[in-house]
Length: 362
Image (tube, rainbow, N blue to C red; front, top):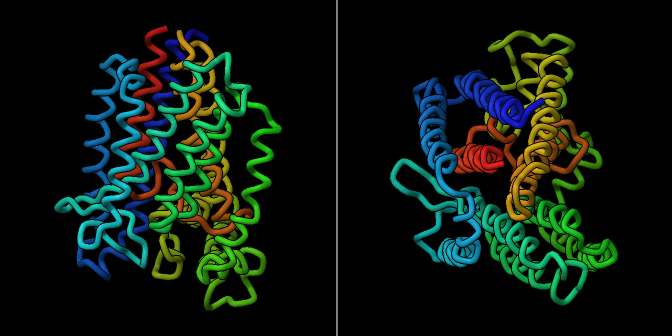
């Protein structure tokens, strides 16, 4: 298969996922939007607007020289740090449910942690490309990225958003591992982080409740275990072929976040085992096509940038599926291209544009 065919397949799968997202967001959100906002298409219309913005941005990044991103690696970090700090200023950052993660820009919301995640990926790809001969060294090849990652994660953690911190750290570590950082160095940091992670989870009530609900959701079926139980009910009631598109019952104000973090559960209920397996297959093909583009990139920066962006999309999809099937504790990570969420969708589409850009320059 030629690289051109690989790029076409990669873009086609992304388009399929986006289209599935449009359909499922309307199916999952229509009743909720009608009950609370008086417009069943409220979330659909906003999502379509985000798709249009994403298409424009995708077109822009596909037409530019991706090497510009290498020059912007450090400026993007500084901008991300500034925005994450600005987010904490009272009256500027938008607080929802006790978390201060968004800027409100008219009818739009912007989540700086998405930009921070992107800037870490770009910086790590540039760092590996510049330090290829030193990556195995702890002081010059691992510590600099670790310090940047740690500072960024600390600011995201203050929001608080432990899920994004863990996802960003995993993506960065995967890139460094493939780049040649010694496993012993990374394993040491991971082991040292375990007590900190334990403290972060069990010293905060809602995180502790989520972990306990993950271990045994039936211990508190009307409280902490409610969401994951409703997710499993949705998946289980779908059977092989599902109850039919638009016919699901869990979205009828039973399953919280049905059109965002738990949209995979609605896919399972309405499209059944066939629908969920199809999503897994699409993500796997998406991964393989992306890896082919990465391996054929003309330079190290391009290779690792593709790998980092691809890792971001696939890891978030895996985590989302793991959460909805109770294989992982509840984390607020959307399903790429499918869950409702403006900032995440736009960045996901931009990632696809950058990957296609790198592939065309081979």
